Image (cartoon, rainbow, N blue to C red):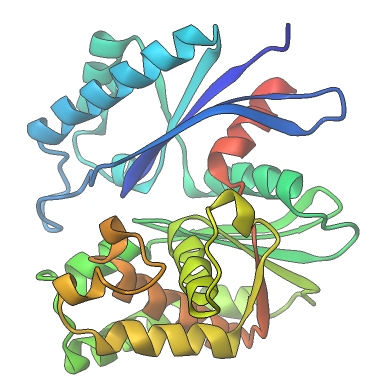
Length: 309
């Protein structure tokens, strides 16, 4: 029997579970997956506290994940990222979850997160000997990883994400042109040092993963009248021009309700997608990225790889 890992990614915007194992060819085989949208920092940016109501909902979701993991007799590995690592009550959060579910959450730092994402991406995309930049945009942070032949040359986590920026600039999820400009300037300023560091490398390939990037690919596909699910996005590429067109379309739809009608956009992402697109397009511009390839694997698949070795 193959040793199965139940990898749980406790993110800012959603929780993900995959149950998977490495086969004889060292490829990831996913036997079950689940995703629940839950906003950990859903109350207020000034007070960085995960509310008790959200902790209670977390416990409900994770107890369901435990039941699924037991069905497959799999070992549970749970990691939490930016929302938990920045929360003032993270110890209380971790302790409550452990007492109620038996899950020991590992709160990982940004560099560890970046390294795990790279391990996942390598299983999804044939990178070969190319110097590869991986970009992973989450709800609370963005990870940048440069790797070559399995080695991480550069890893950095930046406190910019689709949920974080939405709360800062579009708290009522309505698009205002002045706020768009302010958000763009803020993102550019926050990215300057990281872009300088990345620019020292000669990048052969750019790979993107997670929510905002998957959403961009799905909307671009829908524009081309293709219906795809997330796993079919793996290896799909889109250009800067295609991204710019989608970004303009998103930002021209001012209200949340109208954005929910955009072809290819998951309804649950309609609130945070404007901020996500501003961030992604700013990265493209600042690094002069012409094309990006989508990886359907990211952090949770990296957990499987890491736990199987």
